[in-house]
Image 1 (cartoon, rainbow, N blue to C red):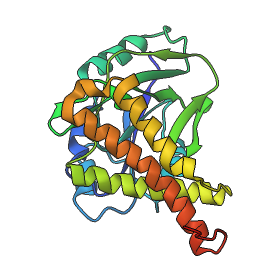
Image 2: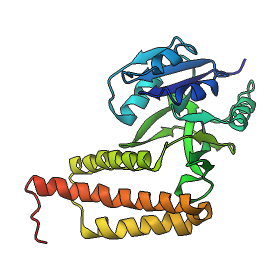
Image 3: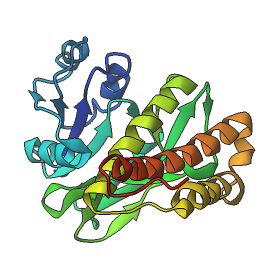
Image 4: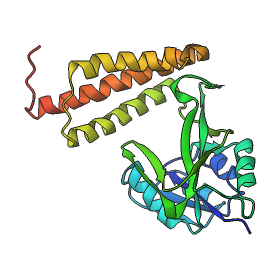
Length: 258
């Protein structure tokens, strides 16, 4: 018999997305939900698909990932966010890999493709956004710098070709609000580490972030959407380092001489 897979999904007020995500993993051997005390219909929808529904106060992306990994009953874990969906192609690739006695790897990586403003993004920094999300539970865990977690494993990893779909933002306003929230989380991480931002961080880094995504990674091929993605990403970099400077200014560690 093949080794079994637990689909592990973190949720918080995701009634608009969660059913699409759940339907895409009904082929897994178990679905585990870790919810951060949703106040909408998220839990009601989840309970139609699984009885493994748990709640825990939010402790960051990395902490929450490692917590839900420990709740999985099976040897393999598939990490998903509530606004993601396993494509048909990715499902079939995974199934083919998990035939009896065929697994030679401890983890699998695959591209994540974003649906943004009514269109699939195929270039720039958003694609291919390669993620290691399927791995042997005993040989992997999450690390990183908030809010960006990543899985590391002890052993060989294979790259699959079909995408994990990501329905990331409802609107430009939603995109900007998320950028603002993530920049605050990242800035707080840097402040805690003792980082001091410079003019180069606020001016030069955003410029090169824009050039990287829009020119070098061909974001321009996605038209106006590619331009917006590159602009907002660059702005997020500027805002993050500006917030680091602001913290030190307010705490009296820096003096404003401008």
